[in-house]
Length: 288
Image (cartoon, rainbow, N blue to C red; front, side):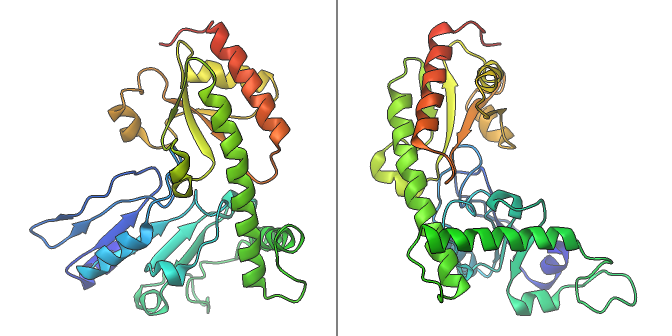
């Protein structure tokens, strides 16, 4: 798709990707612009000003492609306000099945070649649709609408769009309340370091996913110990390989990642903190 777009324009595509925390624009001799920025990163989870990147891309004639996969489950998103040319995410991030979601400006989608079997009539149909995946995505959307009606401010006869916006607003407020509690506890544990934004005044720029290191404890050992306590976390680089290498953490196993969502509770946060404090004080698994 992007090769075809590149043939049509003197500038190519600005990629707005997860796990990138710095913006770079490199206007090469060929006229191609490269840009990268995250809406919310898988690793440190900053919420970047993607709309600003889109504006800067359009100002020089480039297209903007936003990967919002880590942002989608945590906050409301409006593609028209963002003004990107393409926005993608996966429903598994907002409690649905593994599938793909692509928004594209209609005139751009119409200009792209559509590879499909004959005699398929739908423009991008390649055969039998993923019907069970579609049903799962619909169920996820209906679930979020239920959250909007029961936990947000949406009324029964409100449009689905406003109901979903109410859901994501309520989810955002609750998750960041939990995240405040988590960060307070993490900062009180000797040997634990939080990588990423910790300034409470800038929490509107992040989502509730914490990346940690624990002095003397390998991230894999910490994740396994938490698993034995019935707490699901993950370790490694989470596809931010270059960033972890630049931070000097690749050889020591990367980081431990803790993610909160709206169905977590304050009691679960406290139980996680108790487990982490035991792990940090024991430090029985050396790094390396």
